[in-house]
Amino acid sequence: MSRRNLKFYKGPDRTAVTLLIVIAVIMGSLLIINILKGKGSDISGSPSLEFLISGEVIKDMDLGELKENLDTQKISFYDPNYKKEKRYQGFALVDVLELGFGEQWKSYNYTDVTFEALDGYTAVSSTSKLTEPGGYIVFEDLDFKDWEPVSIKQADPGPYYLVWTGKDQTAANGYPWPWELSSMNLVKFEDQYSAVFPSGVSVGSSVYKGYQIFKGRCIRCHAMNGEGGKIAPDLNAPQSIVSYRNTYMIKEFIKNPSKYRYTQMPDHPDLSEQNLDNLISYFKYMDEIRN
Ligand code: HEC
Image (tube, rainbow, N blue to C red; front, side, top):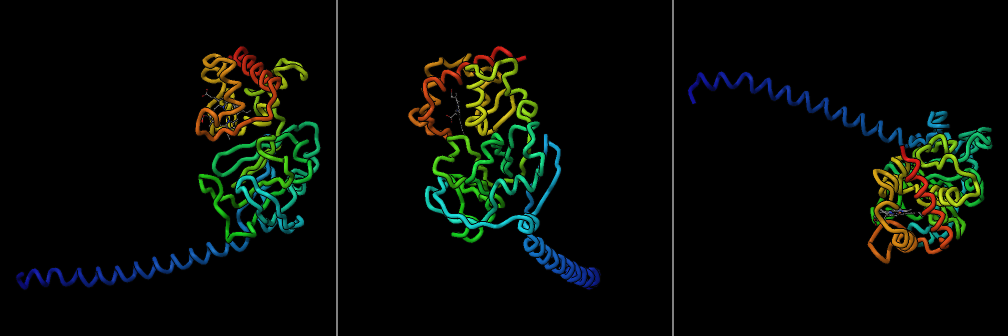
């Protein structure tokens, strides 16, 4: 390399090194500031729980605020999602609902609460079911630092996980068990899910009873006309299940899917022949009123 070239490269080199040092110092400081900030927000209990009425946000509370306003309880019970005894710290569900929704919670204008999870899972439950004792929204796993991963997906159930301590308060019996719970929406079901609701039938009819079973036990996974769970196939769109499967096979499958497939769908051994016929009536009715 000639002298001339050396001289040419020397100048810019120094400047570049100085510049790099300055950039490194700035980046380092920013990183430290961010780490400190992150810690700060963890301490203030930032994961928040959102309360909505008919889809409009009315309140948003973080863990700190929930703790200030509610009694914290320690519970221990057999958790079917882990298939073992678990201990948690949390709040009674009725207390949370009353704090979040106030008087509205008892109003006849609303029939259900939908629970939405960060992973897109939605569960629906009638308000009458939610007032039963046994429901808790837990925020801490007392057997495991942070949270013990749950299910085959090894999901993180935090920041809020809805559990039920009663032996029969299972998901199969229509009790909502969402983990990664982020919001609760108080709704009048037929307004919020008009595409699932069998309008024009009487409350005691077979179609209506089938709809109640669908709403209580199937909608957390399945949709009707695009409304409802996203985990499992829509049972009415683009075509109704009753238009491409025979009744016998649909009933067989609903009762005992694990006999036919490795599937996420739970068996429903307690559904009677009458319950299954009601579900079929509901599917047939929804097939006819599709517009
Ligand atoms: C935990 C989620 C879940 C629940 C709850 C659930 N299912 Fe399913 N279901 C599935 C999935 C996923 C499939 C997709 C196919 C498979 O995995 O076998 C399915 C498939 C079906 C099928 C179609 C079978 C076929 O391929 O023709 C029917 C019918 C059905 N479910 C009805 C119901 C009814 C009725 C209920 C309520 C009583 C229900 N499911 C509850 C997850 C669920």
